[in-house]
Structure formats: structure tokens, C-alpha cells
Image (cartoon, rainbow, N blue to C red; front, side, top):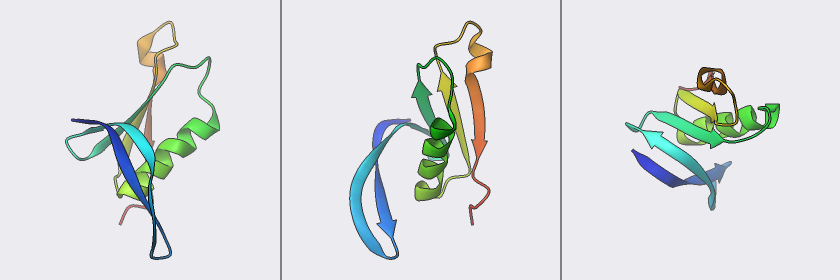
Length: 83
């Protein structure tokens, strides 16, 4: 498991550097983004999907700790564009 991993960004073959940091990468396959917010917003899902696309990963978990029942705070996100 790797925490606070830098994500390298490339756009049309141009390297834009390591401007993003994902929270956790498990077994080099599952990206986990941790939150503690009142409610998950579309921007949170888009953030995780961006990480999945940039890292060419298929599955991620969006985990919100600010919920009464922890099971309600776990959302699975799938990158449908993975090659």
C-alpha cells in the first residue's frame, strides 16, 4: 500500500509534472480517496475518476468518514475507459 502518491499528468504527449496526490493505492490496482464531508458531491467522484484515468486503473473507492453508518460512506467508482 502506498499513501500520498504523486500522480504524473500528461496531456497530448506533454508532461505536466506531478501536480496531484492520491490518498492510497492498494496492491497497485485500487485507488482509494478519503473524505470527511457532509455529503459526497459529483466533484468528489470526478476527482477519483481523474486519478483512475491518469494512472490507468480500473477500480477506486471513495470513502467518506463523516457518516453515521460507515457502510453508507463507501462508494465504488469504475473507470469505463481503461484499455
